[in-house]
Length: 392
Image (cartoon, rainbow, N blue to C red; front, side, top):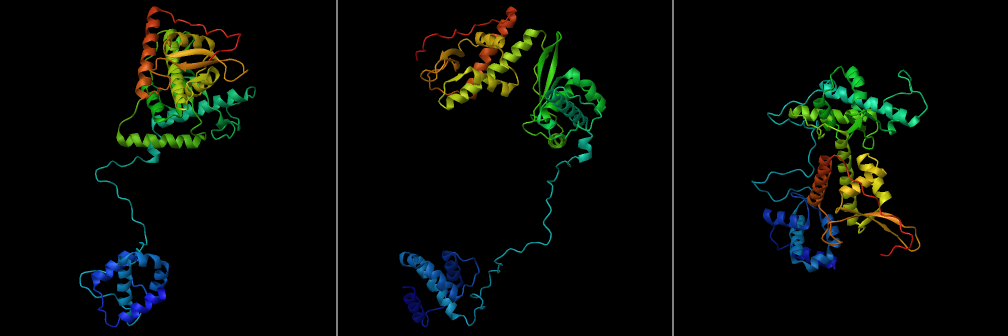
């Protein structure tokens, strides 16, 4: 079929008119050739064999091959130029690469980026470095137990492979002297909030009650980055960004609590928020109730707080109408387990969005504030474990 079409085109070339430039360019475009290409007769034959079926089905493609075959046969040599024109500038098929890559120009009027030396010597960078190194040392000491780490020991290193895995935590008053001595800068609460905000999750803080007084517990997170050098580099990038903006963020730390009851309420609020969020996520997986053991583990992973029995009873009392604690048997002849489920929903299949979770958290905060105003937190005992089989 292809040979017959080729013979027919050759026999009709003697009395055909050479195509114009517009027809030639249109034929190249239809057949997918680059603009300004000069396909040879051999290339056209190979393309015709590939597109034999399309040529029969699409008259437009057949006409394009006819135009190119007419032009190819009219050329005296394979290097002959396409039909002359006075308006088109030939464009090379391959873009010429410059010898040197172009330099990226800075937007006019944008501030110059801060130098690495200025970033490293900034008070916030020095404070972060001292806090991070001291917390890493405390993390090593916490996990190795009876090994005595001396300050001059070569085993104590910011890039220690073993110690880098273990995060540390300590109250602010325990870290203040070390941080101020190492950084040569007074660690004010405002500067601490800026450092915590620019740490972007590498450090966090919350209020605790120690020896009859409130204090800020600073916690280290090494799941994001464990290496000390990588953590300092990440903090340096954030600091350089805010130095250019001339605007420093502030960590969202609640006001200092007045009494121990306020600290317990802050802990209960964080525990309820994490538990409610976890249960809402489980509802997406069609699990409306979760075992208490899994809820405890999820809450500890998200808040770094342990949900002990006392906090559990206080949480159950303040979340009356929001959370339900009930015994259930997961499968036949399996031991009963205490499950936690969400209450206050329109139906069993309702899914909660962010706004609804915030409304539930506000309801819990109101109940906690009312309990603090009364001077004590209520407790609610867990339902007793059933002796007989649990009925669903």
